[in-house]
Image (cartoon, rainbow, N blue to C red; front, side):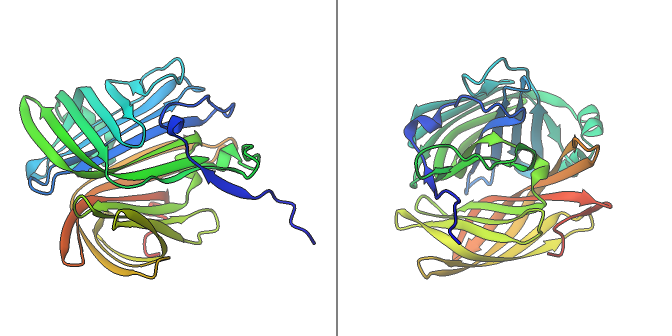
Length: 345
């Protein structure tokens, strides 16, 4: 019996760096994300802006890992009237040269947390911790090729088999970066010169569309980095992937076996991963979480089901091949009966 399903390919064009015409799906989301970690000062941060033009708002997140274990964090849903630019809530992302140079700026406030775990109860955390002025300027430079793009039919037509209710994104790409600039937090200036990773996605998105995932981007300098990914959907079967950046190119990961240490809150404290690539290379990676903030997303589905998604964002020190690097360990879980869905998997 012939397979009538259309062949799918990945497409990525320079114009994809800019905003797209939104789908008709109510939950259309166009998102840009950046992180950076300075290996000398061990100061870092991540930033995300997700336009939801059909819902009339953007999701804006700023998270800074500061000396002494402090974290500066801000989240907002500023109103937007369209999808013409990535600029909302004080966070602005400009494409200077597609695939090569971008600039990120922020002018607003952050909630300054001495005890980042308090963000598990965000209303209380924002109420009981000071909100202080914050300005950020970061210039990003691509040091790797691009990874990913939009999955389309081989004839160039868009896919028609995506269920918006179960979608996380129809297009996604990533790139390892170098970045320089500064954070100014409550009058204190932190110069930043380090490395990170950025990604972009667009299409229908609900955070609850994924059962659990582990996403670990890391850099060991300008010419060596990784992104480890383990993702599960409704079938709870892990899909292992990611890439290794070495020798100026990406070697895609075919196997990623990850083991995690947890604390009493169910937050990751350390991890170990064994990685194999399509190019026949093997790597062992160890990660130690230096600072972590727990975040959450809540949603009621059309059938009245309540979804409680937790995302723990850990600044992590990584070791591989005798090198020390820095990055993030981002763990997403659905909270079911008070427990993370992927704990112990």
